[in-house]
Amino acid sequence: MSSTEDIVFKTKLLQLECHFTWALRKEDTDLTDLLNRLEDQINFDLGKKAGVARTYNSIGFVKYLLGSHDEALSHFQRSVELTKECHGEECDKLLVVPCGNLAWLHYNRKDYEECKSYLDQLKDIKEKYPPDSTSVPYPEVLGEKGWTFLKFSLKYYERSKECFRKALELEPDAGEYNAGYAIALYRTETEHTNPTDSPTIKQLRRAIETNPYDDVLKVLLGLRLAVYKKYDEAESLVEKALENSPEHPHVIRYVGIFFRNHGSVDRAVALLKRALERVPNSSLIHHQLALSYKKKQIDLHRAGSHHSKSAEIQRFRNQCIYHLEKAITLKPSFISAMSELALQYGQNQELSKAEEQFQATFQVATEKKDAYQLLLLYYAEFQEYGMRCESLAIKHYMQCLKMGPDKSEGRRSAGHLKRIAEKRISRNPKDAEAFGILGFIHKEKGEKRYAIECYEKALSYEDNAEYLSNLCDLRLSLQ
Image (cartoon, rainbow, N blue to C red; front, side):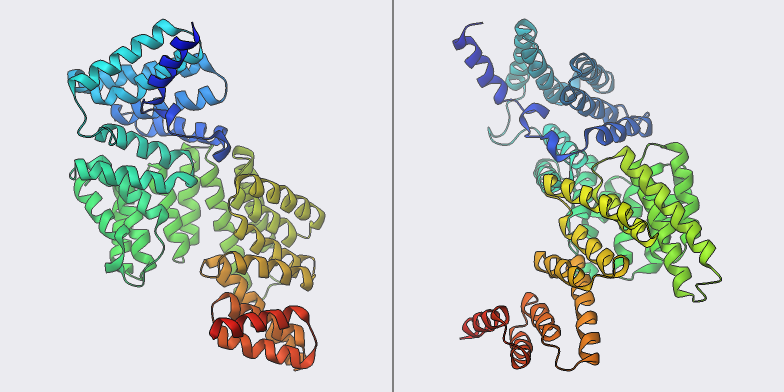
């Protein structure tokens, strides 16, 4: 092929809407875990050919990223076959993505005749169904793009939300797009003070209207309503979903989370174990089981008489560690599970093992630029309670708070810092560092006048360049 022909091919390929042009970076996900989840999804959706066809498309792209080009080809072709079986002559717009993937794959394999064949098919589809706009794809393409982003990485959730929003502008009553938009909102929305202000709750209700038999949506609505203390409706939705879909792993997982959060930890454990029987390679379910056993440890501690219950607490900790180790074996870049495992090693007095796990987790979090704030919080707690090193704990609590004072990790770090400072002041009312810590908390939370008072007190007990600099900056900002 001449360079001119190659440029023509590449120009046409880059204009396609498919996985190869959606900027899906393998660095942003754990490909093995993603593959496991997609293969599980095929088993869940066996009765829904349209969903299975879409999943085969994504598996094909993951196989391509893993270097298995022959397997990628067979999965893309299977996607085309299922789409035709499911939709017959009305399938053209749904073939845009798999045909685009096949064109790219054949180009990369230097099979230019096959590549041209798929490019010609896509040209025919475009001529048969002229798009409303050159910049807005068919809703069918936007829908598949939205689901792909939702599955691929949490870094793409915002992009997923935007795809579903645009698809709904074109087809507002489509159940699939309403469901996708609801799930994308659920995963991205921060809490509101009132459920009537929550776009997620409104969209979940709308999605259930258009998908009345989707029990995953009902559980998600129940979980979100519970955040606003709407417990009666939440519990009703969750119980109904479990009754209708008692074997669906996604339903069981979310119901398990609901029961754990609302005091029924044993029921949560039983449900999650049942889900694990269906999908033994689910890192998410292993993680949720670990968190349930952690909750059982905490509940026993709070009940008092720790000495008499130490064997039971240790048994729960062992179970927690076992499921966390399984989770990160299945998904080596599962940062929240890695962080929790390091913390559990610390609580188990395996201090060198904990430090090693924390350092490995810091490396992954730095590479992926993900979950770093949570990791800082856990490492600070490990330094405070495991290593008994208050100075390092303070350092990492401060870093965590600085990363986001309004996030839950930031709020928890502020609470830890305040407790440490107040304890030190109760022992020594002239502890300058303790007042400096309080000043830092107020400064990061935007409470400038309180911060100034604390820094002034700190400076009255000790000359410190950092306190003086912070004090000057705060005074200038109020002028």
